[in-house]
Length: 474
Ligand SMILES: Cc1ncc(COP(=O)(O)O)c(C=O)c1O
Image (cartoon, rainbow, N blue to C red; front, side, top):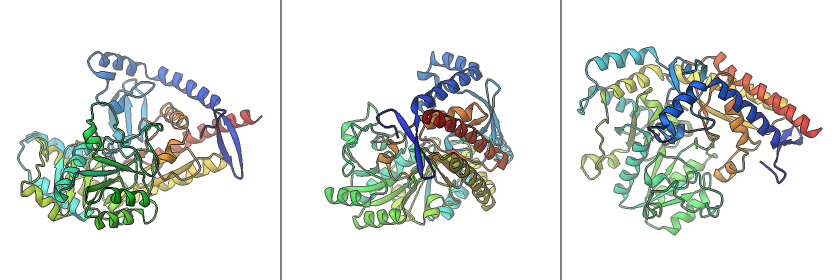
């Protein structure tokens, strides 16, 4: 982390040596210039788009420096931008495309479906197959479909409130659960507004979120059962649910400490509340049954989206029978014109039953191992104070030596390394999701050669950081 002189420490076996932040900034400046040279057409399209759309992008997550990259097409593990640059895709549409681009089975099945009509707002038989498969993977019996992660967590919270007859929601500081009001609280709060660690403030993510709604969402740190306990004491019989990303994946990757999820579950139940897992990122990517399977804790309600739809906009919310029964009893309205759309259901069925097989998960683990071993080696060789986390199809580099337990730890990381890495990879044929907090997503169509591209680029960057360190130390 930056010290008072604007320097960062890089660890070398037992020694740590300072690195000049100014030199890292110089590398960033060089890479930004190279990026601009390679993306002129994207920049032009962005300027045109801006005339009719704020920031020239369809979602503010795509509005990133130096400017957004407009994509032309994708195939397998690769995508091509409008300037003709080819990338190994580690972004994979913010973690959606674990099937890879234009997967033959999905193209065929969805094309056939399209030719028979694309939307009826009536149920189609394939929806039952998808729900059955989700029930098998996650061990929750009843499912409804949505079109995004936002809708899935929105429904999950509403169902939990109805079931318990309580209004208060507890969420983890810095978890992102989509863009509805109840959860857009303390997503990445500024340090000067976030309050004490044992009682974090509830900070709205942006303007336009009513204070009354923010006041109903209480925030606790991840991996901290003590603060959760005191929160339940502070609000007896008020808390409907605790919503958790079982492994946090929007501030790098933060894994649950052993026993944490179990402790949360038993505390939540002791107090008559429900446990919601937001598995929008972890579901079907870190194991067949997501975090629920991987960490061995089954929540009361699960929110899914992203990867389950094989590239079409699909979400789902599932729960125990007596909880989801509120929908059939019409005590909770779970709605949406496009829910269970035939194209989406076809893509989801093919994704879950034909592509994300046990073999696919073995493939993710094998690629993860190549990345883990390769990157660990580079980090050790260059004495860098970084570490690598891989979990199935997901993983990333954390730019500090120690494990991160929660948002407060994450805040201390110098984000300029992540930005430099993003530029570095992008300028050398590998696209990562934009943003310092993002991680990679692999697909069934990625090869060992693809993931070695990441390691090679990373090694080149590490060499330059090493040169920086030598210069700074000399
Ligand atoms: C954990 C998590 N939950 C919910 C969402 C919201 O999903 P969507 O963008 O599909 O609305 C996201 C999006 O990144 C997410 O990462």
